Image (cartoon, rainbow, N blue to C red; front, side, top):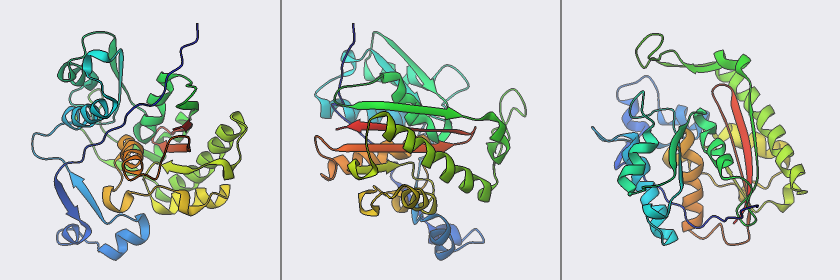
Length: 273
């Protein structure tokens, strides 16, 4: 038996504290102009002391459930995409499960860094009105161009992010263009059929380069990086929720989502809203 499902609600949550580029420049050797030119970021949200990933996820999930007219008891599966879990184990998803009042089914985490949301969507399977297809890839040979040099089995510390920026840019444009072509071909679509591109909000230059290479209309791209910065696996759902709430994404629209993250991991998903 084939089960068909649809997207019935989305939600988002952002911490209250806003840190602007100007504030960063008071304690770091940088400037608003330098950051905007290279990334497109103008500000970012910072979690409050004691505010955990599970807290952020709970508030977003509760909002999605409310908009869908559902509650935790209606859920059978909860997939949480994060590179910053509350604890080494158990999965952060089970904490959210408990807070939502979900008492059946299963909850687990997915760790694909910035591609995490796309990888999590793959758990839903194809939908008639919803996710049309999802395409996932990874290449561990590219580990060293983007990683955090820490972990409980090595340094036992969180570590620091290490990135070869130029190479990440090159790989991102190549892989994202390729996987978008793959997704379009799988659904018999052309770039002109896409109503909205909702990309991972990592860097405006990457987003613009991919759009140009694919011939996608820039006005059809949902951009939130200026206000949200790079929120890793959360960036696509935050942008998606904003575009749904402000009326840009409407029923029947074809939405293309794509992301690349450390690993390397990358993927794309096409949905009919």
